[in-house]
Every structure is written in structure tokens, then in C-alpha cells.
Amino acid sequence: GPPFNASTQIITMLYLSYVVGIIISLLIGALSNRIGNGAAMALGSLVFMLAILLTFIRSMPVVALSLAVVCAGFFTVHAAAAGSLNRRLTSSRGRANSLYVLFYYLGGYAGITLSGYAYLHSGWAGVALLGAAMLLVPLVSGVLEMRLEGPRKEGPY
Image 1 (cartoon, rainbow, N blue to C red):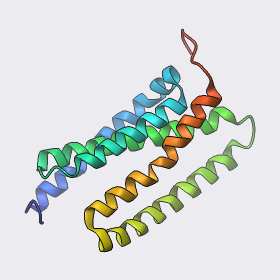
Image 2 (cartoon, rainbow, N blue to C red):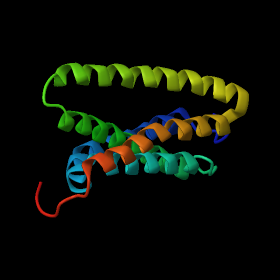
Image 3 (tube, rainbow, N blue to C red):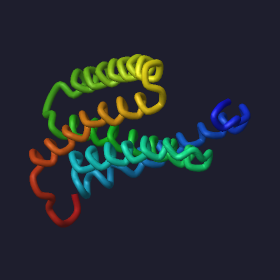
Image 4 (spheres, helix red, strand yellow):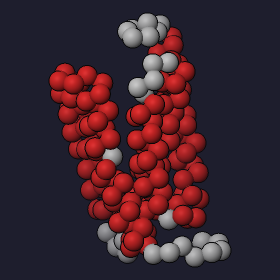
């Protein structure tokens, strides 16, 4: 469909960008161990924001790349946040993870609903601005987590 007049097959192929998220989720644990969950969460938020900016380039290959980068940023934030939660807790991990998942889905619901209104009122620019604004939450959370974690030690974790 517009603005690229892409066929159903091309649009369907864009879903392959999700594979990046699968690969990232396998690697993010090692990255979080090396740089800390807070830094990984902040980095993932910035990567996600960069991906949003890439969507303004009207090129199908760039849009495909931006979707892959969105997946990389999203899965980095998600894995680092869950890792941070579980590292902090000494008990009631099941309850805490249940609450995390609850708010994860509530946030998704709010995000998609607000994105619809943003698109109706401001087009793609409104959706992108809303997405970037919502990414301030994990970005700030990551920075605060970095302060709580303190400096990283050298050596194996």
C-alpha cells in the first residue's frame, strides 16, 4: 500500500525483521552482564529511538532496516528490564514478574491506543514523537539503574 505501493508479499517479508529480536534476546544477557542492566536498557532505548528516526527516510530498504533496529532496541530494553528486576529481588520473583508482564501489556495497550489517536491528529510524525516520548521511560529507568548498579568491575561475572 501507499506510500511504497508494496505488495502483500513484500509487506509479509518485513516481518522477518523480527528474527533480529530473537537473536538479540539470546545475546542481551551477556551484554547486560558486561555493561550492566541499566546501561543495556538505556542503550536499547536509544537504539529504538534511532530506529524511529530511520522511518522518516522514504525508502523500502531503510524501512526494513528500521524495523530490524526497532526489534533490536525493543528486545534489548525488555530483556534488560526483566533481568534488572530479577537481579534485585531476593523473594517473590513470581509475583514481581507477573506484575511486570501485566504492566508490559497495559503499556502496549496504552501505546497502541494513543498511537491511533496520534496518527489521526498528526500522521506518522505524531506516532513517531509519541514513541520517542514513551521511550523516555526506559531510558530514564536505565540511567537510574546505572546509578544504583555503580561502576562495573573488570573480569568475569
